[in-house]
Amino acid sequence: DHDVAIIAKETHGDPREIEEAAEEGRVGPFVLISSGSEIGASRAWSLAGLGSAKPLGGGGLRTANRRIYYTKRGTVFSGRHPIEIIAARDGEPLRRTLTALELILLGGLVCALGLAAAGGYLLAGRVLAPVGAMAAKAQSITADKLSERLPIPNPSDELGCLAAAFNNALSRLEDSFDRLRRFTSDASHELRTPLAAMRSVGEVAMRDGVDEASRREAISSMLEEVERLTMLVDSLLTLTRADAHTAALSFVQTDVAVLVNDAAESLRVLADEKSIELTANTTEGVQARVDAATLKQAVVNLLDNAVKYTPAHGRVAVSVAEENGNCVIEVADTGPGIPREDRLRVFERFYRGDKSRARETGGVGLGLAIAKWAVEANGGGIELVERNGCGCAFRITLPAATGSHGIDKGGGANSD
Image (tube, rainbow, N blue to C red; front, side, top):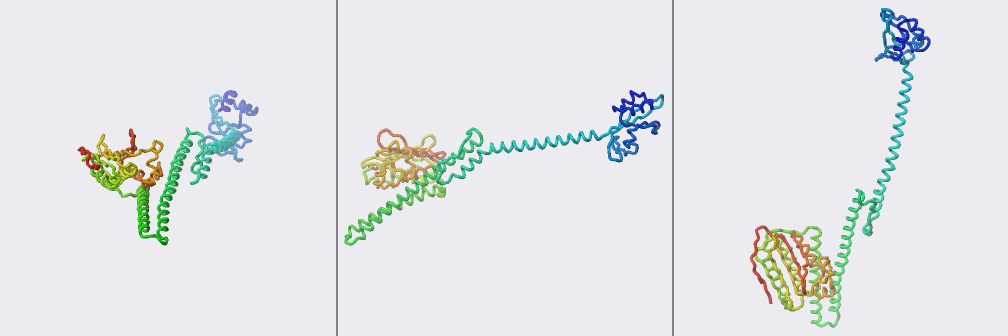
């Protein structure tokens, strides 16, 4: 367009002036067409071989040496005769410019990708370094190193929250392992004690010169230790089934007063031997959907502890009532009570505040642990109740069955 405009403006269509413009190099190659015939062409047109060039789409021409020219057409008038001007411009400079631009863009893209990859690698290393440290630390934590914890570089971000959650899980796991170790140690000790006693008594009974009365006394002592050992094994089996959730439970609507009265009656002989007043104040008609066997075991364990630790001529009372839609069972005694420092641990397995007195009463520290499991298995809760004065009281709370209503029958199972 530029060359055509120059030719039209400076030559006014005069072929001689057009030729002079071409000779002076003011315009590029061109050819003049009049009435469909070529009437002249610039020397540059001929030198470029455009006369025999092959046309391309879009008005381009390709010469024999495969050089491409772009053409533009225009019309000037010489008098009354129109003259068509076809001006050509070499496409090679433009191609070189475009090629250089492509190389610049490609190089820039490669550099940008390289910088992005390097920056991503450095950023990823910086971000993932805490993850690697956490993974290495987690790999080093074994069963004997559960007290160690993962580092928490930033507690407020996602990795910090993950590390904190993992540390909490480690704390629970450490506590479980500690309780398992204590349980194993205590169980071993409790099993070893009656076995050692049986062995000692047996060795005495086997000595020469032991009379029949002494031998019978030794056998009786061995049978007592066997009974104690049997109770311990039964208790351990109960807790093992509880931990494994394999205890067979059958929940049915039960009259809790009848169940508690039966439990009190089973402890009647033991209470009478110590001249302890055992009283059951129950409200008939209080219903709860429970497994009767496990709930009765819980009540029996509480009453058994109360009778064992209450001194002669003391009192033990068990009551059943409905309070705010709950069935409440309470066992209270006039014994020495439980020291404040021991109250938080009374439900732990094998825990006994006064071990010497526990040995005298034949306890192994599993009764309250079993009672707690039995109550919780029935959907209830058990707690040690604060009392004014001597003794202690345990309260069991269970959801009362829908539609239950109590009729007070105080003193339903009294014993003097």
